[in-house]
Length: 71
Image 1 (cartoon, rainbow, N blue to C red):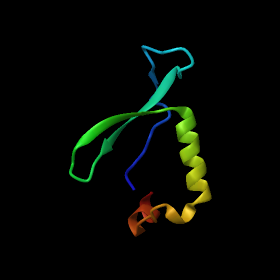
Image 2 (image 1 turned 120 degrees about the horizontal axis):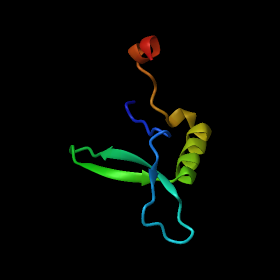
Image 3 (image 1 turned 90 degrees about the vertical axis):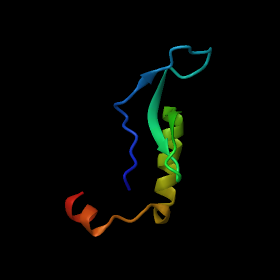
Image 4 (image 1 turned 135 degrees about the vertical axis):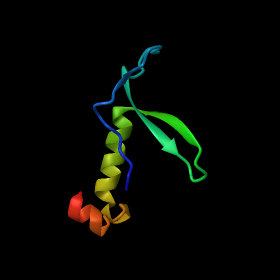
């Protein structure tokens, strides 16, 4: 798995509406056909995804031999 969202890459919500989050976590989405799109996640969305992965470890990709050896 090559995917990562870095929690140290925080961007400010510059045109923030009342009640909106102050910051987002940016990432790039790469689609099957090679097209790319930017995405912004809130801290709450990331926490929900972490909880989902914790509840469903069987759905996480298994590490390859090389990832186990050098990862």
